Image (cartoon, rainbow, N blue to C red; front, side, top):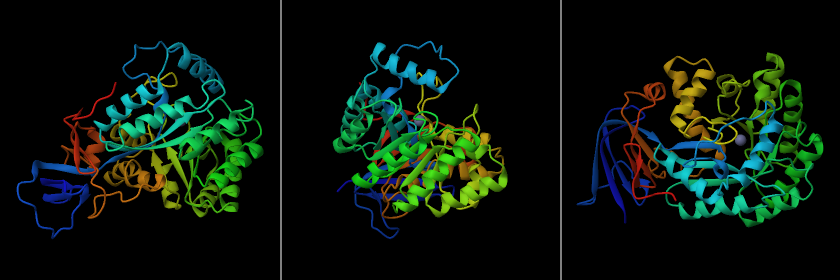
Amino acid sequence: MTALLLKNVRPMGVDATDILILDGRFADAGESIPAGIETIDGDGALMLPGLVEAHTHLDKNLIGMPWWRNQNGPHRSDRIETDRREKKRLGIDPARQSARQAVQTLALGVTAIRSHVDVDTEIGTASIAGVMATREAYRDMVDIQIVAFPQSGMLIREGTVALMEEALRMGADIVGGLDPAEIDRDPVRHLDVIFGMADRFGKPVDIHLHELGELGAFSMELIIERTRALGLQGRVLISHAYCLGMIEPARHDSLAAGLAEAGIAVMTAGPAGFPAPRIKRLHELGVLVCGGCDGPRGTWSPYGRGDMLERAALIGQRNGFSRDEDLEFALEACTTLGARALGLPDYGLGSGCKADLVLVDAETAAEAVADVPIRRLVVKSGRVVARDGAPVGVSAP
Ligand SMILES: [Zn+2]
């Protein structure tokens, strides 16, 4: 039996207490402490649950590679072209890069990741295989979910559907989709194919939806219809959902009611340069919201390290939050709500839950969001995996 005692820590800011972890899970309060077990003094640190990265692209970051000069054109299609070209030209290895990102963010307290992974007619399912290798190699350190993602379009590139099916057979967990009207230019067929695949393979769905205004709202309605029709409530997530940050309030609230009723979650990165869903209003209307960094340091965006505590701060700023309870809600989107959106079992700080946790020097969760302090200790399933911002006993190529 493995055992760890954390002394003098404050779970979510309550009074200091000792936390016993047995066999990777939080023990009951009355459990007796085995003699001679590993003990760490938390020195009054704030204890948070493991951070949840609900949206990234592990297969194509540039972490540890030379700085790449970004000369992207202004449109999403320019970035898709650049992405496909540079993956080959720079030799971006999906296994190596996904390991680098997973280890880097583990040291920042990220213990669960959902990654979209490119499937297209040039790379086939090689990126899926690469990220699957990382998932296996680091399975005790971080939980990784893999979305088969048709980044270059699905219907417009013949053969992509068959490759996505191959990815699901290989072990991808989730069916991905992308801007059904703007990229594939056939929203009904795009969504019918994706939802059909989810139905046949018994998998959840996660769709990138950048489409603006009424176009995005229309695609969202089609997603709601299909989720209901196939009984996929609680298994569909819409990533970005920019349109929700644009449409007029009555239309917004009626769409939100549809999302809530269909159990569809919404992921936001709190983007600075694009419209963003208002997460507090969505939450009030019963929509499950969560946060993600959407790929640190890559050809899409040069910014960030995949830090989900920093992301909570960015989401808070993008939503105009300043009250403590709102900052705490932004953190919830990057922890508890993210875990619910991803369907992570046994998540949280309660007894019996998997002991995934982060210690930081902050008085409250709101202060942690505002300050983004160094992660003093990261524990995954009861095992110390990082100290003072650096990984412990784990490294990447
Ligand atoms: Zn993305």
